[in-house]
Length: 560
Image 1: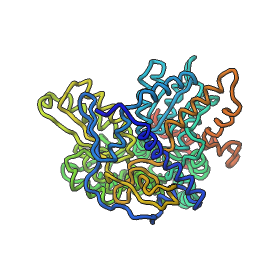
Image 2: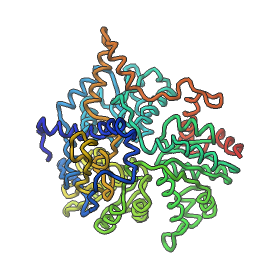
Image 3: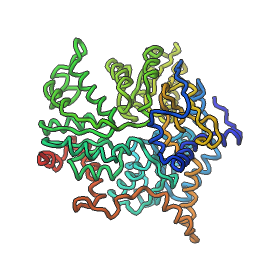
Image 4: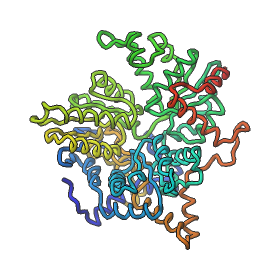
């Protein structure tokens, strides 16, 4: 079991490490004019990386709530899976006093997620006031928190800026536009992937690719509202998630056979989808996909001919990547192939092709999964449940190994799910090992001027758990959300609700609101916010009715 006591020094050092990305980003902006995104994507560095990957760090989850970290990176992740109870009580009391809800992304810092999970279970009042989910579900959870006579009167959104922007938009579309959404920090929390769609090159790609075609722009939900608005003004656009992107493309091509799909901005995800269609078309023998199997397991209105036509119609934006998934390098893939053949392999749709192909190949015989964060969580939970419920495993020790091919912050939700399964089944012989595909000691040396006197900072330019050889397991932007900043926001909200509300607090809280770049803007004589919301509403209608909305189909057919 993890030790329950922590020294002030260790807390301070951990907090400094968690704040390093933000601090370094601010220094980099002032001294070089480059954002953290730009620096992380540069091909050169100020110091050499350790290029070796001997074995991956991991966390072993066993019966009776046991957790055993292996490797220093895993130890850092595991430290806060057992949350500090004083922090839990402080946050719980603050939420009740401020009448707030919290929505957080799966990629939050492990310390923060551990506390949030405990807060959620601390009382009936808070059971529906804390939600950890993917970016789309965060907005839905916020709506649920605000409903009813005793609904939340403010929401804290822990994620990057486009997520808080999206949550605020979804609240407004559901009649809760008066509920403020606060970010944990007044600083801009960027996203390398979202920013790649804000370049002039993205608009130019849309304009060029849509010519002489019945074009539909399928844009990843993880983009700003401004990107969605500008895109929708140029070409018919629908948003997608990593969970529904495949069905979106299949359904769109079924309803409009002549369609040309423009997918962006995530280059890896787009290329991986093309690879998936290629695998279906090229599979032979027992694994072959004939027309009947395609109609049964992929889409009822498709066959080999239409899948080939769809595959050939996809145009992928060539220059958009997430810094986390972009860093799954060749050495990571080689180590997975060489040393982890017995492991289940999970991969987010955003990971590079080789890593995706390993997981996709394994998925054909139930040994892997490719998809969204929710897909990965559900897959691991299902495999552990199957093993724990198998009567034959009651007498023999069994350790299931899972390569976590996405951001390491997912481990908090995975640990909770696995522990719940093992507790409920009472099987003392099943363990789950969550393996982080990064170098065990992934740190980088930096110049003193870039590190404020520190000779070492975690990862690439402050991205903890990253190296050019070992991958990047945590998102430095997500880690700009920390426990102290969240508590500060909650306390400010509580003070403003009192009879002697502070003008200073109200002014400060305004700086924590989501970006509002579309306020008062019109694009093509249409309100820009409405235009940016349109692709999201199209997606929600598709998810509800399992069909591309007639209005969008009409726009596609008129676009040529």
